[in-house]
Image (cartoon, rainbow, N blue to C red; front, top):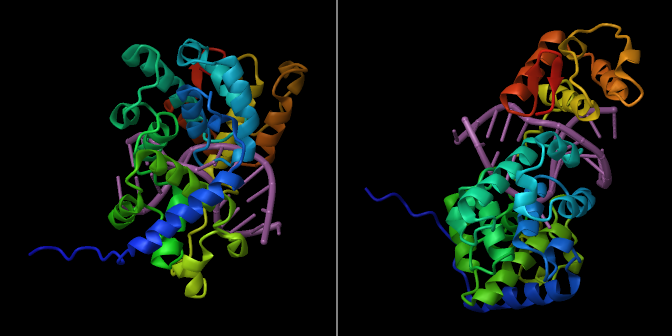
Length: 324
DNA sequence: CAGGCGTGGTA
DNA sequence: TTACCAAGCCT
């Protein structure tokens, strides 16, 4: 028996044409002036920005990206850098495994692509830390390819404007992908602008929390607004933070970033009064105090250290734990 | 495939 | 203050 096709609302070509025009025209004047969108920004710069922007707001990425590109302007530069330097330069962007994978991606680019960021989606997808979204984003934003870009902003805009519902599921569905493909302009150059513009609309106007519908260029065509802005059916299950392993991992990483020598494992895992004088004036005293202030049980802190080591974010030496 | 993975700003 | 949220990826 043939499975019932997922219903997709009929798309009025007239409406779609209006959306294309209104959203791209809005984008032409409202877009933010971001350095990775500059005409002379390299594909490498675009890739770095996309990795940094995974789950991290633009305002926090901006200064890190500028420093990063000045320090490692090409994949080859990052590929040969000490990994500890890479992790420290990542600072507090969060998800430090992204920094690790970005360097691994740079090394793969040097080895497999002669140091040039590959232009095609499949080669990009094969790079560490590059998933479906990032591969499409780089292919489109760095190389002008006609690919369907689907991030959380675009999903939210499509769900509201076309489907008339608030985005609920965390995972991308086949129906959402099909919808995004059907909405793509046929013209390549226009499709690039469309991807950028819809994403920007989701970032600036059609935001998750308090959408600025009064300023929206397609409010007149928005099914969600017409339906009275209904809330999502399923409430999101909040991500716990206080007291979690992730919090402890983060605190341990902060210690390792601040330390210029290996940190005795006892300092990280055992609750005790440590003679912090030994850490020296430039040592991780402040970060150690913060780790201790979490009051996490020793087994949790051991688990955090083990996790960091097994993830390659830290290594165990005779003298203690340090960045790789 | 649901859950794990950092961090800080905002409502 | 707590909880959500921010251009996801990987297992």
